[in-house]
Amino acid sequence: MIRTLAKGALAAALLALPAAAAELENDYPTETRADYIFGCMAANGQSREALSRCSCSLDALASILPYDKYEQANTILSMRQGIGQRATNFKGTKVFDDKVADLRRAQAEAEIRCYRGGV
Image 1 (cartoon, one colour):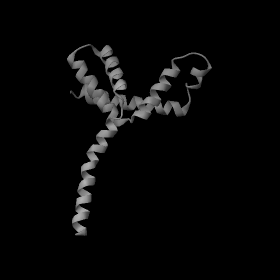
Image 2 (cartoon, one colour):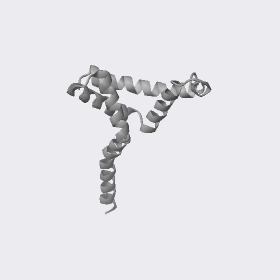
Image 3 (cartoon, one colour):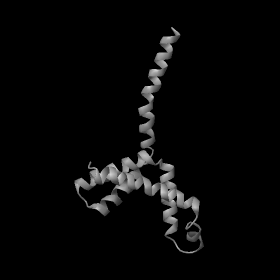
Image 4 (cartoon, helix red, strand yellow):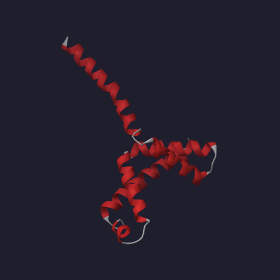
């Protein structure tokens, strides 16, 4: 009886793993996803192929980098575009540089998966 219950619990846990992984990949809000794809298509053409590659790129990025880290890196990049002391505080700081580097690595991997490897 206990053995059957243990097997059932193990099976349920294994079935939940793909759902948990998919949940992590889908933690990007819809507005962020749309903004990313609109920007990507503006840079890569307004074609069906661009839509497919941009969608692939976002999915790959989301599978590598959790949304909170993506949001932090984007905020840092946005702040660095400003002028004055606030912008200077976000430039050349190792903690901020590391967050942006994580985003850049994820973007590079997404590009390899979706633009060089085919969709």
